[in-house]
Length: 119
Image 1 (cartoon, rainbow, N blue to C red):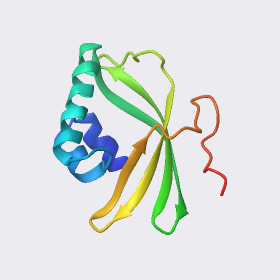
Image 2 (image 1 turned 30 degrees about the horizontal axis):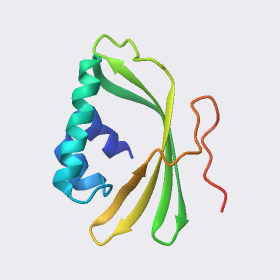
Image 3 (image 1 turned 135 degrees about the vertical axis):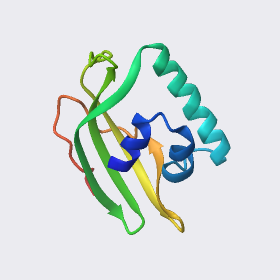
């Protein structure tokens, strides 16, 4: 998740789509969707994200869950509202490594501790 965030902070849709996501029908479509998302964020003044907490746990032999708390910041360090954010991720292990298969899988809140989902 830390390497994913480094690529995210570079707005590197090519690397994220190729090396971290498995959320769409093709890598090219994932990359195009990511780039549209970055364009929208940049239009709001987005520069990078600061990560406050990451928690991950195995949910099966080839599946995992991760939660992350963060802020999206402008170049001057001012947060884009809301200041405190949280997101969760479903991950699966493929032949070429672990990939995020769903973003926003639920179960996290910026004002609550991150906790692995109940088995």
